[in-house]
Image 1: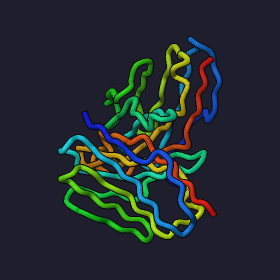
Image 2: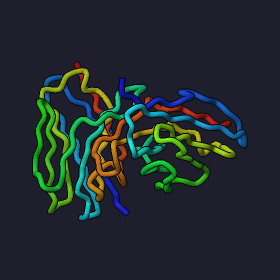
Image 3: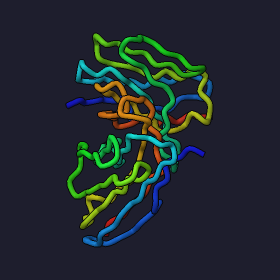
Image 4: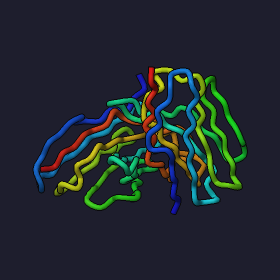
Length: 113
Length: 113
C-alpha cells in the first residue's frame, strides 16, 4: 500500500530534550516536506527536500533541522524543543516538485512541556 | 510571498444542501490551486485541483472555479452528505505543483442531519 509513515504519532516531552520525528514513504517520491498545523493558522511549511541531499527552508524553519540521506526517509529533528513547538506535524511527499498531489502522513502530535 | 485567504472558517449546512468555500490569493503568478480534505485524526488528502489555464473543473459532486482576474477560487460541494464533514484547505502555488504551496487557514464544514 502506498503510504507516508510517521513516528511517533503522539509524543509528550520536556523543554530541551532532543527528539526526532521519522518520516518514510514507499512511493519512490523525489519531493518531501514537513508542515506544522496549528489552530487558526492552517498548514505552514517547515522544510522541504527536492531530492536526496537537497533540503531547503520553508516558511517556519526556526528550531528545526532535517536531513535527506535516502530517498525514502526525511526525518525532522528538534535539537532543543520549546513549548512553542507544541503542534501537529505532517510529513508529505510528491512524485516531484512539479507534480500536483501531495501525499500526507497521519500526523504526529507533539507536546513540549 | 503568496498569501491565501480562506472563508468562512466554519460552515454549517443541512444534509443535501450545497456548500461553497472561497479563497483569494495575492500572487498573480500562482498557477496551481488544489483543495485538500482533512478528516478527523488523519492527514489532508487531495480532492480536486485546477490549473490557471482552466476556469472550472468538476468531479461528481465537487467542483472548483477559478477567476484569475479577481484572483479567487472556490470549492463547491453539491448534495452534501455526512461524510463530507471535515476541514477543507485551499492552496496556491506559483511552481505549478507541490513545491511552494501556500495553504489557507482551513474551513470546518459541518453537515447537519
